[in-house]
Amino acid sequence: MRLYVDADACPVKEEVLRVAVRHQLPVIFIGNSWMRGLDHPLVQQVVAAEGLNEADDRIVERIERGDIVVTADIPLAARCVKKGAHGIDPRGKAFDDASIGMALAMRDLMTDLRDSGAVSGGPAAYGKRDRAHFLDGLERLIRKARVQ
Image 1 (tube, rainbow, N blue to C red):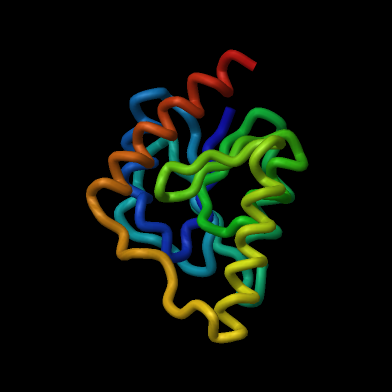
Image 2 (cartoon, helix red, strand yellow):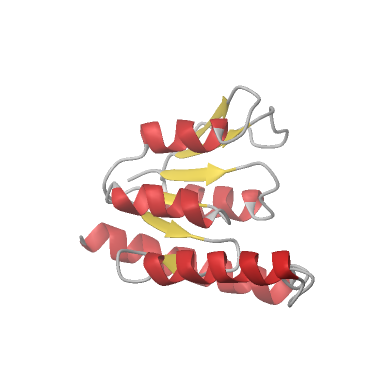
């Protein structure tokens, strides 16, 4: 099992690294630029080419059944779940075969509502409670993935 992180604008890179070290899991951070402060023997960084979905495509190419992806990008999570991986967003919401369809539908609905002006704004600011939910969710997901 490996952890993959959609690293551009990911607010939980340090938390993922701490959990990876505790569980001795390799973690691969993939983004469009080099990230500082992630030096550890369990860490691999992959810098994807500039361009729309380049980092996402690198994650999907590498991820395998039983791996975990950390991403706020629901379409990316769906692509990974389709390959048998587990997904979790930075707020601790897990994605699997049973939940990814609804998550995609809600994303599309909210996009349509924002585009029509019926809804404005986006998600609430990321805070300590979100970080705690993420850590708890990632621990549960790792335990679940190890059993499968």
